[in-house]
Length: 502
Image 1 (cartoon, rainbow, N blue to C red):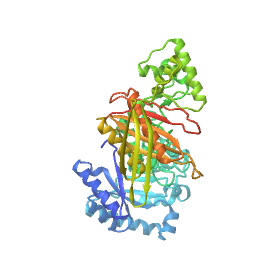
Image 2 (image 1 turned 30 degrees about the horizontal axis):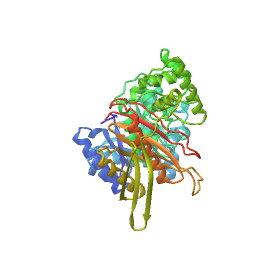
Image 3 (image 1 turned 90 degrees about the vertical axis):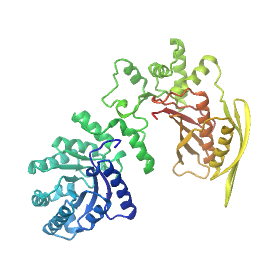
Image 4 (image 1 turned 120 degrees about the vertical axis):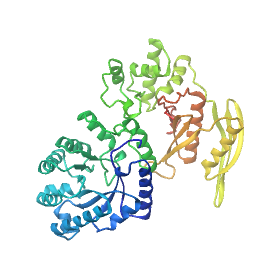
């Protein structure tokens, strides 16, 4: 696969028909590519029911869920440890006959080790000679700290040195990554992760964080292709609808952006502010934000990427202008610099080449929305009308009619996010952010307006001007830019341009 992880758990047995069909498709795909033994399904202590479900999907590996604490065993199952162990052994016997390999989860293991360790010893003593590949130790409620994780994992490994143990961390106390470090230090050889840290409640430990711990702190080799991590994380973000925080290590939007001018200066002087987490490792590129914290070094770094040279005096004037804009809360990066340079050194702004002169939008119950627009492109005005599934869709269809007439290429809309502030009223400002793909370049535009459709139209207009006026990098290069300036009452717009590999 793209990431080349060692194993993946794809479903829970008996959950739903959709879960069954999804697991079956994944397992069929894996079998065709010789990955079948690396695909696992969560099963339950229910005789042959889960095993038949797994077998029907084509699966070959069952991660059996049994109780890892005496309280769970007695309170939830209402069974003695001996009865529960007997039930588990019966499932193992059936699995062997069906040709299904077995791993075993000890649910609530962390509480079991805190409050009833003798129960865990009894279970492992009874199961250590069974045909079980891996014994999985979950911190089910995310309660452990680093010392407990180390002590409990070391206890398991010391008592049962011939068994293979995995550690499964939850992040309720925001200690999942730290606990993984402790587990590996104790000798654990398998770590359960999720992309973007998705999972129950506060989630599981993110794969991105584990990569840094394993490779950089322990110097262990991994099969994971870390250069594909960012792309995979963004894909999961898109499918799940759960946004990656901008400051999420390795995969967040801003984690490789230096804001301080001191840092930019240090990077010029023998990479003083670099660590082992170089962005290129993960298919990304370092950038230097511009604002009130910027110094001359940040300006020069961005000018260098744009291929622009300025005298010391001119660079000083541009730096002062950037700091002034930053004090006004405006956000700018390198592709805004040509506009600032024009303003500072020539006393005039670059004119927008594309403007929406007028537009009319209509919506009626039971009828398709209709949009009429007049757009000015390089001083020439064009008009068009179109219908669509919603006002913005109608607007875009009218716009593309004009672009088709002019034989202009269409950028492809790839992401559309609308944000309304908590507690907002009917006239609250709406922030709209749209991501476009234009010949391998990602263009992200943002706009604010009380009307959601108008905010989207502003995003679109800004995107068209970026294409007309901004020198986009070729495929295979990555860069980011933000364009836009305050326009009266909170009508700030900004644009991010990012080139990516096709």
